[in-house]
Image (tube, rainbow, N blue to C red; front, side, top):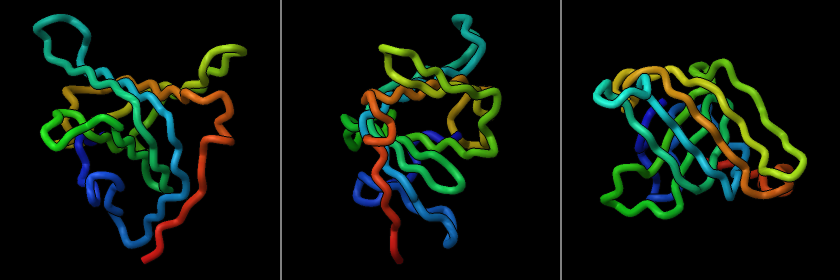
Length: 136
C-alpha cells in the first residue's frame, strides 16, 4: 500500500505498467486505513476520507475528493497481492463495505500491516461503477 501516489493533473493515477488498464471508476467511496498496533506512543497512522476509486487488474487507487496540493492525504494505492483476510459486508439498510488487511510496501507510508475499510456510499454498487478504459 502506498500513500499519495502520483496523479495526472491531480485527478487520475498514472499507470504503473504499459499493460495496466483502469477498468472501473467507482464514485462516492469512503476509505479508512489504520496502521500500527493501536496503542498511543507505539507508532501508527490513521487516514480516512471520501472520494473515488479506480480499479485496474493490479491495484485499487483511491483519490480523495477534498484534497488540496498541500494535503497530507490525497491518494492510496492498494495492490491486490498485498490484500488479505478480506470480506464484504452487505447489510439490508446500511452501506455495503469491503474490509481486510493490507501489507505495507517499502516507502509506502504505513507503519506495519494496515486495516482498511472501503464503504460504498450509494445503495447500488452496480449503478455506481462506470466502466472506462484508458487508451494510449
